Amino acid sequence: MKEVEREEKNNHPPEIIPPLDFSSLVLPFYTQALIKLGETKDPLTNKPSENLELAKRLIDLIDLLKQRTQGNLLPEEEKFLNNCLHHLRLSYLEKVKAIKL
Image 1 (cartoon, rainbow, N blue to C red):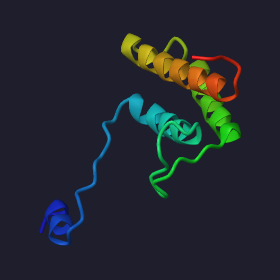
Image 2: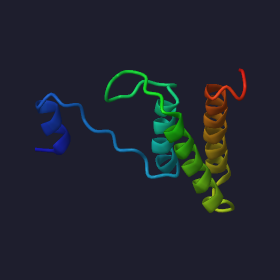
Image 3: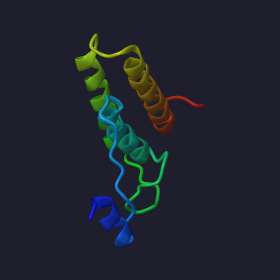
């Protein structure tokens, strides 16, 4: 029996396998940063979970990835990375009351 059929038979939804592309490296950090900024609920507790120190660390990790991949990304990958960083930085600055949106 195929794995997907076995999972459906056991009432478990099939697992989603992310695409093999650059966004698959960025999205886990981005998603965790959103959770730690309190922008979305923590999937484990289904409640907001704010930790600005950890959010900043995750933003810094994405920025490090940007620095280390500079000049090696496709234009759409670079745009995606820059948009993620821009959104997270604005949210962080708003949370620490450095700016008002």
